[in-house]
Length: 107
Image (cartoon, rainbow, N blue to C red; front, side, top):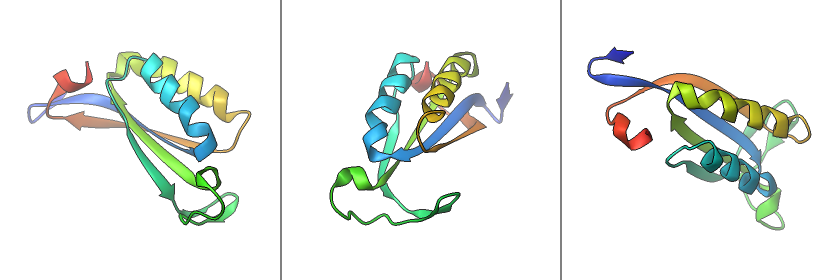
């Protein structure tokens, strides 16, 4: 689907403890995504209360958010894999439709 010369893609945002971020990165690259953005020291409040973005003892005590965009046809397998990983650890995943101006960057 196109909108104003933009191409529809699927955006995944995954917030996990930093110790789980390498596994999410591996899933993203295995799914054929051409890249991701990683934001360390994420803070906020959620199901388990408040999370500080400050480093307490080491980098594994913080949360990391990983964001990737990929074609909708490639997203299902990644979504399933992240859901499986999150079933045994803490974290959340957000999935949304998004539109990009350079679809060739995500193929």
